[in-house]
Image (tube, rainbow, N blue to C red; front, side):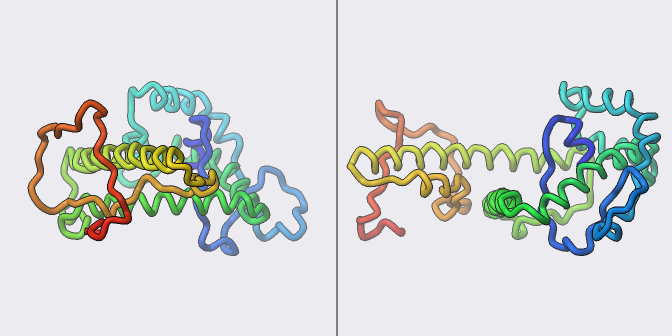
Length: 231
């Protein structure tokens, strides 16, 4: 279903696949697929997709214009824990792109490498979020209650603030290195992550007063050659 919704929104869904040999592919026609016959053992019901196509478009326009959140759409397409006909149709549509994703993942190394890079970024982001949301080791133990997602929304806001902070000061550090005549290779810059967390302190007293940063409006960068830099 996610493959279908994401593709209808004009994007691509590229999850990593841990159990590639066990993945199931889907075909549209009955044909001889040779070595892929066992893989393409599922069949897509195109009639179901055509029957609900107008509903597809209404759902996608509602998400795209912000009238409804994708999270709410996922909940609405379940009725008492059972999938609705519209959900089944979106899932059938998504099987086309899931099958293409599996095949591309299996044969194209650059494709797998890009997914690995994205997954590394996601894991770094999750690790930063886990540090910021430090209560009970970053886990939510309460049963679901209405509005609980606002807690995660606030976490996302703080996470974005930290990411912006890191990005800004990484850029400042690179500018200083270049100004000092140090060689800065673009391939090294491409590997820098805005999700660094060693310098983020989440324990202690919080203040929301704006610090005096002088006319430049920028904190003074630390010198890594100073003896107490790691402190």
